[in-house]
Structures are given as structure tokens and as C-alpha cells.
Length: 309
Image (cartoon, rainbow, N blue to C red; front, side):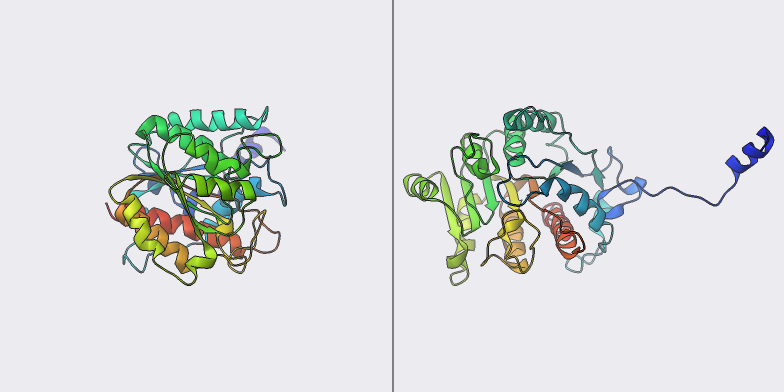
């Protein structure tokens, strides 16, 4: 083929490029960094998980599934994502020299983001990433309350010879000085149970078994967070495995969809949410419902937080 013919082929119409992996599949004009009120930061990290791996693939699965979500929110009678914009950042490459180095790199990245001007949503990855997020947020906001939805207390001081395991996430966040309020807990070891008993002013754990028969936990939550700054961290194993089975350590007897939404909406209404994360999705090949549910949850949290402004 001659040069002229090659140039003609290069100018021929009939092909297009797929859009980038923007959350919700938003068009460029609805996801520009400068004008978006929310930032999505994917962190595909999975190094300290102790049962089933795969959480490193969670952010990609959530972004892919999010393109199938309807933008219209029936409760708001609007398409809120188009009103406030969501920009998806490139995935953060973890520093794999050690678990501690990964946490430090995440904290540094969050410190460099405009967290006071834009709502940050982090997609994990295993739950240990929340420690790095919390450290970065502390540099922006000072002390805050952490609301944790989780099957596990994550209060071990060390696990598998590292204090930066996913099983230590809440304990390391407590090092920053703020209070932690947990929902959906149904798995912990003796040392964590003892820590809860010895530190009632630092951490409150609402057990899933009690939550199912006594809904006063919402009143208790309001008393703890009203008017305060909150970091919301959602480990997807807080859900019952009938809702989201695709997690590294699923536990029976978990929360259902509207249980979680009620907690999220209460937090958004009664406090100032400074950031949130959704972690521990370990995609199961051929089972896309958990990916979509996680993506839908991210959109519902964004809507709850930004919709009240």
C-alpha cells in the first residue's frame, strides 16, 4: 500500500475509542477534575489478606459495574452525578516494599488531594488502606470520628507479624486519637473483645446479632456524631453474604441493603462526612451482582453526602 493510500485509511471514519474507566461512565464534561465536587481514588492493594485474596481487583470491578448504574435517583428526583460531577483519578500504585510503606504512600497521596474542596471516595483494596486514608485526612481536618461498617472488629494490635494488617485497621486509626463507632460486628478474637471492654470511650461496637433485634443503635449513633467530622469506612463484609458474597472473609448474619443505607443516610444527615471508602470487594468470576451492588452503594453514599449540601 502506498503512502497516499495509507493516509486515506488513517483519515477514514468508522472507529471510536472506549471511554476511560470513569465512575458511572460519565462523559468528560461531567467528570472534569476542576469542576467535579467528588473524587474517586482506586487503590488496588491486597497483600495482608488472610483467607481469600482478590481485593486488589475490587476497584476495577466497581468502576466497570458503575457504568451500568442509572444516574437518576428516585428519592431526589434528579440525576445528581450530573449536577455535581465525579472525577476518577488514576489508580494509586501501592508501595510494595512493606505494608507500612504502602500506608505511608497512601497517606501522602491523600495529603496532596484537595480534600477540603472535594469529597474523597477511596475504592479498595483490602481494609488496611483505610489507615493511610485516615492519616492523610488527619493532616487536612485534624481529629474526627470514624464510623466503620464491618463484620470484623479489626482491633488487633498486630497480625501475621505486622501492625498494618487488614485485621489491625481500626486499631491503627485509633492511634490518631479519634473515636471509632462500629456496626455489623460479628467476628473478633479474645484480645479484641478485651480491648473493647477496656476502652469504651474510644470504640463502640454494635454487634450484628443485637442490631437485628434492637434498632436503638441509630439513636446512639446520632448522639456520638451529631455536628462532628466523620470518616466513613465500609468493609463490604458488613453485608450478609446473601447480599455480597464476594469478600475475602464473609461472615453469616450480616447487615442487609436498607440497614446499611439507613446508617449511611444518618451519618450524612447528622455529621460532616469528610471522606469515605468502600473496601474488600473480591470479585468472583461470572458473578457480577456483588460488583454492581458495591458500585451502587458508592453512588448512594455520594448522593447522601453531597445531596444535603
